[in-house]
Amino acid sequence: MNARRSIVNLSADLADRVESFCCQYFPEGRKQGNYWQVGDTSGARGRSLAVRLQAQGGRKARSWADYSTGQYGDLIDLLHERLGSVTLKETLRETQSFLDEAPCPTVPRDTRKDERPDAASSNRIARARELFAAGKPVLGTLAATYLRVRGITRLGPALRYHPHVFLRRGEDDADPPQRTPALLAKITGNRGQITGCARTYLDPSTGGLAATESPKRILGQLHGHAIRFWSGTSRVDLIVGEGLENTLSVGTALPEFDLASCLTATHLGLFNPPPEIKRIWIARDNDEAGRNASKRLRNQLESLGITCGGLVPQLGDFNDDLRAFGRDALRRSLLNAMKAQGLEIQDG
Image (cartoon, rainbow, N blue to C red):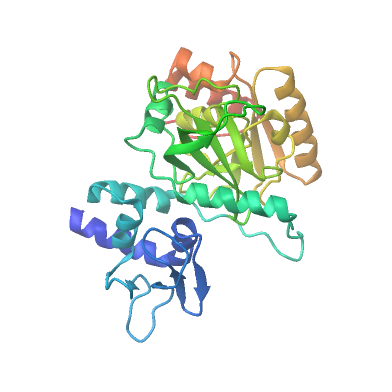
């Protein structure tokens, strides 16, 4: 398949998921009839730019126009503008990442009540959405360097990078907040709604964690939710882990599996599973907190009729294992553990 054919196919695939595309990259927009309206290609609030959601009168669903500037094009053109991409290749890479992310499961409204956060929580969630929307793809950034040094190659649309995120060094710090680069990760519920944004603050001189009391912080709502990474294949298995880096380490070794990172042991035990999942593998840390959280989650899942399996690292966590033993050794270890618990999977 030549490059031109690939672009045509990618554009057509985006058109099939145009509303999800708009929700992902233009969350400040609003659906009005057959259009998604937003202020401009940067994603600002407004109604000058319109994306057609369904084919109409011979016009394709993937077309858009900004009536204040005269710009128009297809969804790849729009994504190129939204990302501020330097090259088309960068935009196409992001397009593929978006398409590889499986649709978020739908939760029947008659079986689960919508969460109604209070005003303060709603404000934090709104700020989290704005922060994530302001991020850029991680490839070629300090965030990519941070993950690469840790041996992590599993990325996805759930990750973003922002070069200047406000940071207070401590809760009692009276000094004005500093602007620090950060790896961003969107926290979502089972219907795909963004409920929060995890921030991993980075040191621009070393590429490691920022030298601060708490370099990892959460804005918004995490309870029951997770950071999700889809394999692109519809499955009934899900790996649920603690920290972001630990979960992505497992995903680096097992790219064919869907992932959900709960960020902390406490929230691992509180994870709310998607309705169609039949089996969950709990990838915990090798400590008491991990054991307790795993037990709590297992009890909850088994009460729902979901089969559970456990994955435990040889060292402190799975990123330790990945860096100490390498991807191939970690993959063998994980597959052996899964097979010992009844999973048959074709290696390689």
